[in-house]
Image (cartoon, rainbow, N blue to C red; front, top):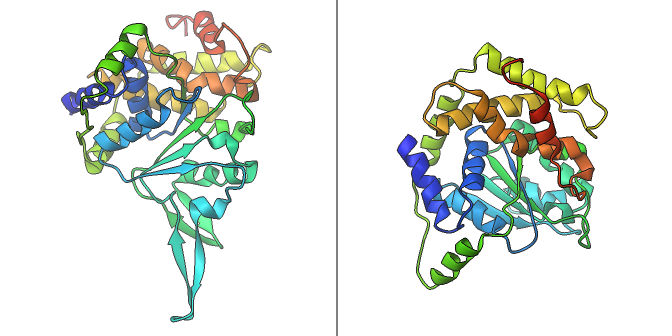
Length: 303
């Protein structure tokens, strides 16, 4: 299985050049049963990354363009009256796929954004008083544009906190962009590497990765440092603590270890916590990552 994980990273890397760290983090997010938020300028490969993830895992995939007039029923589904049977039949929406790409999520109204909360937290949705289970595995990838662009609505903190990770691909290096241009005429179709059932098996294996008490203390010291200082707009919630824990397990698993080390926590920490620490101020111009300042404050050996 470890070999297949590396095959996934390589296959996606053929489409998105020079972004192996972000690809690895995206897979870590998926292996930890989390949801992923991609924030970047248009044209950076956010949609390509989500399509490649679903392709290598052979998962049911749906892309939904979020707009200001999108309604919750457009995403969740609706009960429609059938005259022939004199009954209401439920017509499932795009959310009933294993991978849902919520494209430009912050262009939809807060009412539509909030329709994702139950789905992301509990893998089910409630429609007209009835609950429907979502397919397993269930993975939301949302993209968003910077708030200074027109027609955007800031995600509320409750929604931001539901995303296990937030990643930015950023501009490619000159060498990566050259390779992209030279390979444009070649066919690099992403083929299946893992099945959905194998992914579920991997997710269960990740949950068995050992996290020692010193590493647990290190994680707790990091999150408590965010709560004891006024320099962070938003302290890290218990949900964030669990996300760090599970992503560190997935990071160790991807690196072929059955135990977590502090370096695993450090590798995933910014992706898991930066958007939570900033909240609605996540697009503020700043050269200093709040998450990095936490890592600098807390010594893993003293935790």
